[in-house]
Length: 620
Image 1 (tube, rainbow, N blue to C red):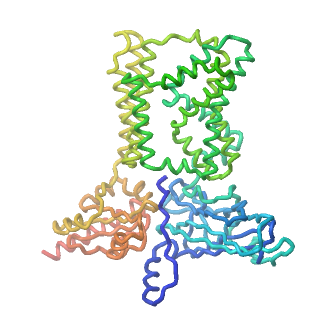
Image 2 (image 1 turned 180 degrees about the vertical axis):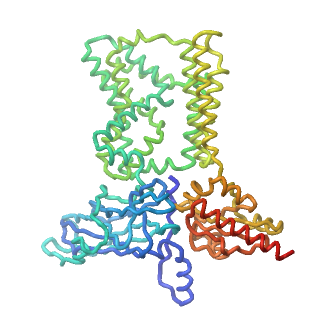
Image 3 (image 1 turned 60 degrees about the horizontal axis):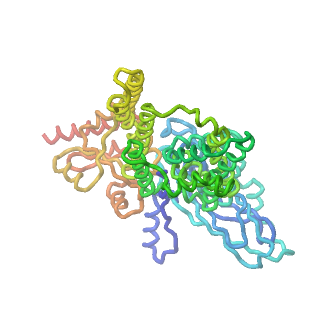
């Protein structure tokens, strides 16, 4: 999620003067491009029409450094990702990322991470159309990579990939080339691992939950999980308004044989599945366009507003239901056009359910898009649609049981408001992601605490002293306690950083206060571990309280502002922590580069405090 858009354009080109060349060298210093070179090669000097050829994108990573694997061990790592744009008549049929090596790193708590090091090839298999004319073609693309060592991560760089392909007549074959590389002898990496699909790199941030489910559970269990996700969509607010329409639709059907009722219900469910199968096919064809759109603050905010509007309907602010003309048409569908009307009714339910795309559905959209396989997208979302329609299959088949359902009463009003509280929480979460993503998670305990208080003690349905009122009290109290406990868990103490600004630094110097500068970035893996492990330590928090603690964001590493800060404080990579005395001079012995644990960082703080004390005594 937060990894999208963190790729930094690499500076290329021929410079005319020595001074310009030196300037370019300084710009590249400290970036991933300074520690890796990229080359593209073919397995033959020329390719015949209708033939298949292999290519390799070769990474040469400097010793002592590594790149994250294509599918990183941790979700927040930035993976190596190749995207290709094949010329007309040439198809990239297969992309094979190398098998990663597993190494332990201090910044990850000595957890083993999947990385590439040394000479690492990424192989491609390409097919040339039989009718492609002879001539020169060019495969273009880009390779996004981030280089790290045991303590520091450099900003990601994006390399352009350019691979000329000489196409000859069908009867003419080119000579073998780069045989050592393509026979497996030219790489220090282990056996390659296929990555299905013609487009690579769509999962650079690492496997999401859906991808992990397919890898770890197998195809059958993964599709079963998708079916369950579809089943759970029946509990979402988008489907709720269609329940009454569905009940009336099947309730109005004439009773008949069980097989006939089952057939009618099956047609209805197929209508629902059609909507979702179309969604999955589009996601596969567009390469996960929906998954990318759902990362937009505008889309997230729109979902939040929609859920909040639906929540108001649950609390009785207005009646939330489809338009009258739609209800009338659906109610008379079985009379007007028989099975076609039932199919259309199911299609409409699928349309209304489509906005309920929670995290599992978003993850499935992203995974389907990464596979670039329309048949897989069709299958996956058809299974999800069948899961959504499964309850309707039961209702439609046994429509005679609808009359035996318990009548609604006070308890149903309370349950409706319960769903309203859940939707308010979901709305707050999506709005939080759009506006203040760092605090969106607080919507969960806030909803639990507020919902428990309202549903258990403020909501007045039920007779005083009755059993239902006591059930409400018990449920409300339990949920309220869970919400309060959740807030406590989320409020784990940590260093409170102020955003860096020249004014804040000047004010500290004018007040003769020592300063602790923390240079960080969104793509910085050791920074995340510092925040989680070191800066939450009580002794670290207490020992740095005498410093003005300023945090400088170097996410946009090549921007003029970031460049000026790096040059001013001699920052070669992140994380970097700089201690300044009251006069603005650096306490050099305490400078910290890379990840350090709480005990090691405490020694740096103590060294800084000792230097400050010595300076104060000498001035007296």
